[in-house]
Length: 288
Image (cartoon, rainbow, N blue to C red):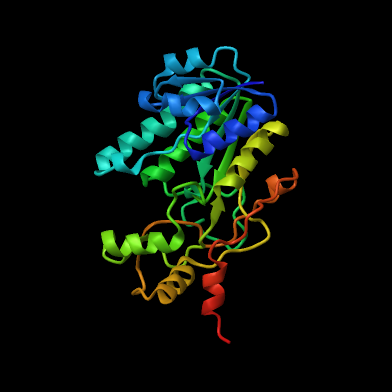
């Protein structure tokens, strides 16, 4: 197949390499002309464009059998609430609208943020659980972007938790230290939310799986066999092990507070390969 990948970050590059090994023709995109040469080893062609530039996306997508949207907002462009709304809408919604106007078969890497805290009830959060948190830009614009993708019969939305493990990513202890050094020991998320996380290689595998199995519709992607510990339990354990003061949780960013079901994609044969990155810290905190 001829596949256009919008966004050649760590996931886009790793996905492109895997798909080329399988014989697919890959067109990659970047918003930065200076990155083109560095990206050439990962794709058959590299195009400079921004996702909201619909005409350029349509031109790059000519003859493509599939568009994979891996773009994500850049937090450096969200210093004010106004910037946050503008950047998230442009990076997510307008990019997905451009993709949906250019190809019938689409895959979009979305976020668990669309669920907010999961709402009322005790049942696991599934793809049928209503989305919420309609004011926070991340959740709001991921939801709108999903609608653009699902407007096409071949649209596939993969919802992921926070990603870790990509080259250069901060480890969880490094994230805690950053919270102390830059945010005064405060965390925007809630103490009781479950710390779902997924290794970037499992993200790549999920997209490759969706392509191979021609999936359409919406899928939660996470470890379906383990319920993670809460933010408080994990980050308290890290702080204790690292000799840091425990974080103060502000609960400004809502996240699911009960199990998320990935039954739907697991029933198609997908499995995560990486375990809990914080298991060692949690074991240290267990009573003898």
